[in-house]
Length: 294
Image (tube, rainbow, N blue to C red; front, side):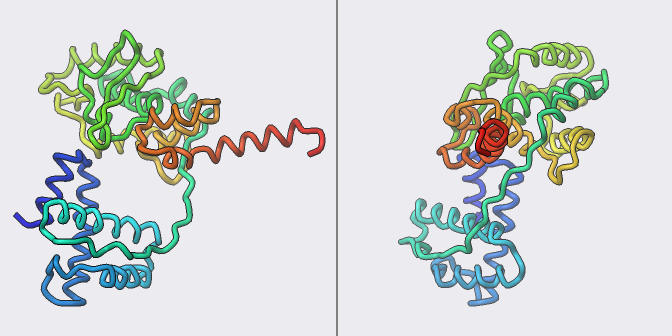
């Protein structure tokens, strides 16, 4: 097994990274190895240093990649290098002086409140198993702000209808308990009854396909994209957009920033603060309408 293969295995089983993230890491590491071979010759992890990585950054920028994409690729390489250090495959760190291009903070895409209300209150999802399931999927993403991987791995035992809460396993193997709107319990009841009647259950996972198997990532993406396209024209229509929407609406309606941080499972407050832009816009609007000197 190569060092890259053992690293990806570590990310999958110990860090519990999603399949899509693993594919992205592999692609980034393969691209660096290709650059290394072109620049120096046969790939040798002992010859990786910050000077070489700086050359890689320059080449990527000159090829037209955005600073954000370049930073993501270098982060993947640094993570690999950190793993090599931890496993004592390399003797010391030589990537401490890599300077990355500045990244402009990109505001997250989100769906307007009235559009989400319309989708969940007025749009017909269908009365069969898949229609009921898909509406519950959208409701859970929007009602809890969970990550795709967290909802994907939700099991029956993780759903507590009596307390209207779910238990998820997030990044760094951290468990957290998240409340959901009590109105979702009606949907859960309908879904479980439909599942019992129409699906041959083959595992303990909560969300299943019509064949009784665990729902997969691409299906979640299709469900979200299909239904958000009915109510919004935002360019991105993914599970993560519903996570952004959850956080934005919570803060717009007065939620404490630290509470939203805990609900989202963020490690630090700076990751949550990106959502405050909409709250500030709302505050400015109210200020302009109300202050006698504006």
